[in-house]
Amino acid sequence: MSLLNKVTEPIAETKMGILSEWALRLCLSWVMFEYGQPKFNKLLESPDVPLSFIPKMEFFSDFPVVSSWLITISELILIPLFIILGGLKFIGPTAKALSTLGGILGTFVMAVIIWGFHFSVLNESFSDIHLQLMLLAMSVYFLFK
Image (tube, rainbow, N blue to C red; front, side, top):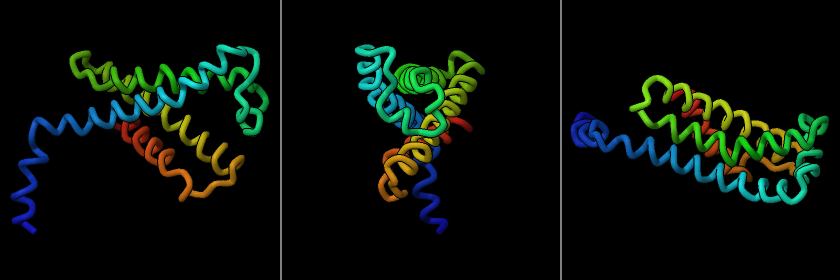
């Protein structure tokens, strides 16, 4: 095993390792933005009408319009913004706080979507939600990064 460690350790120790973190930041931000964009377009067309899936979710059924806007703005703007800004080390300790905040929002949104919609409304199982689980894992990573 020590030969394997000797071969792979220099790769893991390079300054290029930052690319792995930025790959996660950019992918998570882009996918969240892409999920939020169609929701935003629907809400712009009818700002007083909740997104169709929101009233079906127990947690959000009491305040469906507000919930629709909160989820949409989180996905479209807040999570991508916090995750991207959190990678800018030159802004100091604020970067860590923003990254953590993006991770908190992303984890909350994905947990609600997975358990409140995919499992409860669509009756899907873990084998049906690959992308959602990856987004949850990426969000948890930035929660603690």
